[in-house]
Length: 230
Image 1: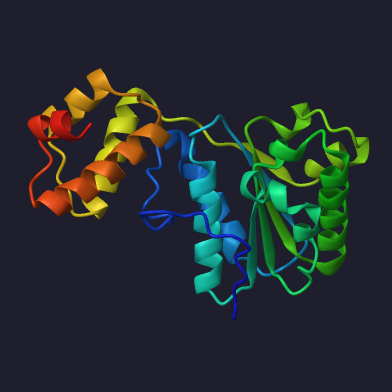
Image 2: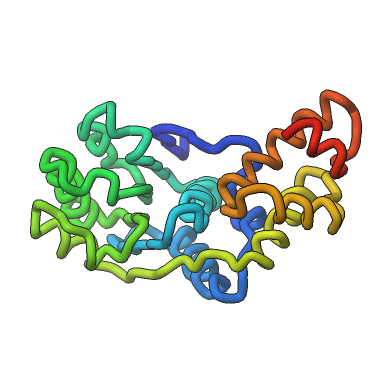
């Protein structure tokens, strides 16, 4: 198979560049990530950082999916989900064109994991593999217990993924709903904005619940329906 997904954590909508709402502040980064995903293996490295729910997992999996469609071999390592399996999951990736490591800050401070990521970076450079990392904060500020890991995490380019404004969050939710065939009215959006959390993670979870229940009840998503379901 052209792709090795260590653990597929995508749920609901396909995580692609097309399904990601790119605000003006993030459009240049999305272009860079797409270019990084389609390039041939050359040992390059990129680090994307941004606050929680800014969309890092989405864009990293979009890179995986895009590269896979081009016939590349890709491994995706979501460290929050894999931490319990041990650091050995970073081994055996010799045949990959690109290795994508999500939430690297989650293992910072764990010496065993830090040494594994350190070895992964060194091996990828020797093997001409591309590496793509993410974290909630700038890699230059990560407090690694292994100093050499800190320096290697910034070997490549680092970019910040900007969080959406409240207005953009509404547009992003409306776009995601439209991709599911749902027409969210302005009244529905206004109601959700007034009464429910406005971080994208919570908003997309609400959309998933509303979509599934509207299918079950065979009804449109309206304010009275939301009051009934949520």
